[in-house]
Amino acid sequence: MIRFKDPRVSEAACLASMIISPAIIPSILETIVDESDFFYPEHQTLFFVIFKKFISGDAIDGALVREELNRTGELEAIGGFDYLKRMLESVPSAANGVYYAKSVRQHRQQRDIIAASEAIHGISGNGSIDEQIDEIQKIVNNLNQQQGNDSHNFRDSVDNVIAANKLEKPCLKTGFRDLDYYIGGFRTGEFIVLAARPGIGKSALALQVAINIAKHDKKILFFSFEMSHSSIIERALLSNSSSDLKTLDVTINETSNKIDQLIAFTKGRKKLSGIDLVVVDYLQLMSDSTKENRCQEISNISRKLKLLAMQESIPILALSQLNRQVENRPNHRPFLADLRESGSIEQDADVVCLLTREDFYRQQLDPKAETDGRTEVIIAKNRNGKTGILELIFLGDRVIFGDKNNNFIDSFK
Image 1: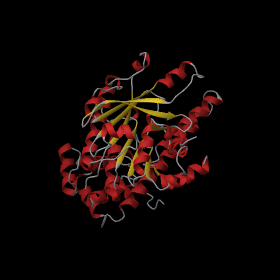
Image 2: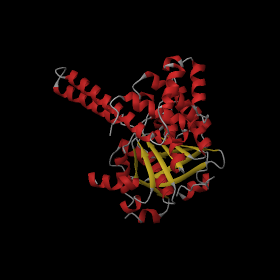
Image 3: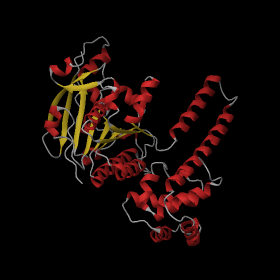
Image 4: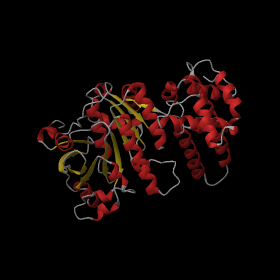
């Protein structure tokens, strides 16, 4: 696809397109991950300025970009006003902006491949064969993780997974009777937190809620930092038919765990095609540009997610880990104070649901212990309604939850 031998040409054309026509920025951000996709330092600086103005909702044009560069003292570093002027004049319109962005991204991928090849070559002869293989695998995995905003929609991906293994919106109902009774469903602008210890089932419950909502012709954007899109679809296929899943507009993004990229991608997708719900799995796997301690970093991420929900008028369901103290209690029942690494999650959230399964802990002590699937969902915070405890039933073989009634269990026998 690359037509420009010198990345400077495609980089300058891409940036010029973003300045000339800011409306094209969401489409470009489907391809460009961050400023590191650009080779030339002056282009990295320009992209960062445009990107920051975009996610802040500021107006963008040549004069405003020049003013910002002048304010930060970076105008001369990018070649001065003359370079910015020549760059803008070199592109007659932004019609080919996405094409230029894809060229920029492919140049970046070529550089990554060269760097990975050199790194692999340097491993030869150092350490045992097994150690060398491990190091090579790490390099390849890292290369795979850097391949852009890699999103996978159910309607496009279900068949591939089967083959390999094979204006204001109304409140969104979760599909769980008692949960909807307590919280009323998900409202626009809400930041909802679902927290549990590892293995309890928070990812499974979040996926099921997303599918339940998608079945009502809603669009879901699912950020997964722990499971691949293939694993998510495989799990969904345990309790849903492939034909049903292919009718759902669920997009899984499994690439960057940086909060600013998540914000940019979400804003871009919302403008391009609309979003009804964002799911983030999970908070503690995300990173922020702050140089502060981890607690402050998580606080920044939590606050940015709440602001994103409000700015874009969409509910955001974010998963969170709980501290180990839960496991030391006789009944293993979590509290708000157990939210891991930050008290600000509790402050920012409109709703906090804490999940626990006693039979999970019984099986930790005795793998042969009887399981009943009884799951407590503790509504520990509810800004717009009541708090309390409700029960769901978990079927481990299907990795699915259901309301506490016999009909749910019987339907899967």
